[in-house]
Structure formats: structure tokens, C-alpha cells
Length: 78
Image (cartoon, rainbow, N blue to C red; front, side, top):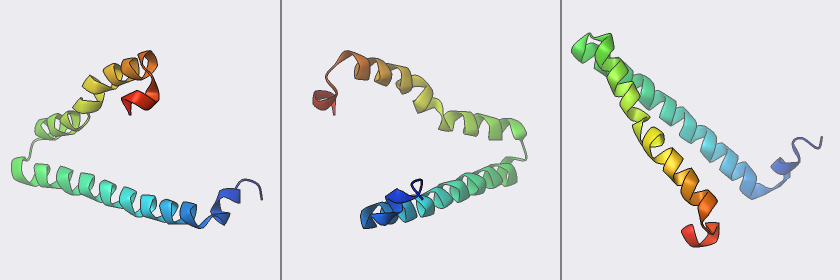
């Protein structure tokens, strides 16, 4: 199968497994955080505020990062 050809490489298999475990941990942390907020405050509004604040850095820095990536040499920026 040409679709799964990348799994022939050992380093990719390790990266895939590590990424899979990391994603599960991230999801578990998000669920635990939401549960904790609801247990402590009993307020959906606070839960919404905390969830929105999680994505604030992406909202604020995403567009400027894209602008920098488009304008300057990527090797020098990195």
C-alpha cells in the first residue's frame, strides 16, 4: 500500500506513536481542566472564558506570525 509507505521508516513510527500519546495527554488535560472549572465554579460562563483564553495566543500571534513568515526569509526567521 502506497498510503502507509511512511511506516516503513523506524523514525516515523516512533514519531507517530509519540505524537499519538501526546495528543491523548492533551485531550485528557483539556477534559480534566473543564471538569475542574465546572466543579469549582458551577458556571458555564467561566468554563467558556477559560476555554476561549486557551486559544487567545493563536488568535493574537497567528496572523502576525503568518505575516512574518511571508515577508522574511524562513531560514533566517527560524
